[in-house]
Length: 70
Image (cartoon, rainbow, N blue to C red):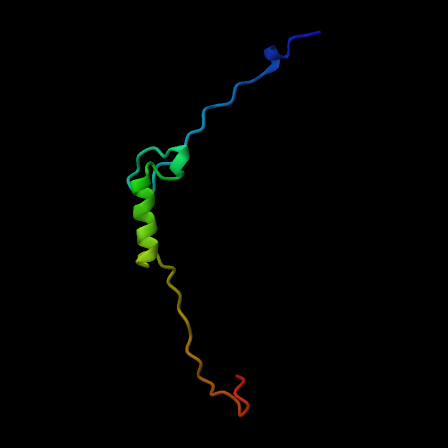
């Protein structure tokens, strides 16, 4: 029987992306953030509607039909 440990290629350690709030290295527990504080700051920004996707909506120029269906 042969020893298969000779054929094993070690994986590179996981490198996380930088924290989107403070740019420090992220940790697995709060991924992609570096700490609970940064995760909470991001959540606060969502609740305050600081993050938005701007959209241009066209107003409806046509009045609804008699039955109320546009």
